[in-house]
Length: 137
Image 1 (cartoon, rainbow, N blue to C red):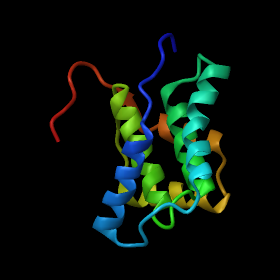
Image 2 (image 1 turned 90 degrees about the vertical axis):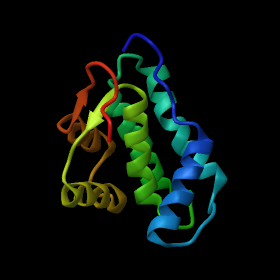
Image 3 (image 1 turned 135 degrees about the vertical axis):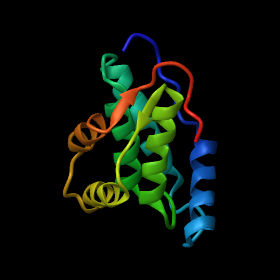
Image 4 (image 1 turned 60 degrees about the vertical axis):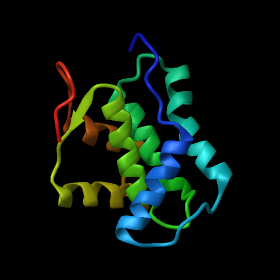
């Protein structure tokens, strides 16, 4: 990668949490602010140490950090997945997978059954670099 990616701001991640809890239920609020900061720094740190890291691997760093650190009282897996999608979208990538496959992948990360590298490989198989403007949803 030659230029710095567009990162997902903390405020956006917190908004994702609130939106997911509002839509799907659960406990609102932060469990551990340091865990959130650590999870959000993971992708940036990876990029600063390995600037040729691809976008799916950086997205996986966000997802893995949020799943493993459990910064929120509830909804951490949902927040992790949506944050990965937002990061990919901000950087010109599209993602496509069926819901059961997504659930299986995220649960594997959360349970410790899948490592960050495996999540990155899974994302690579489901992401494409967008050509032209963003598709209407």
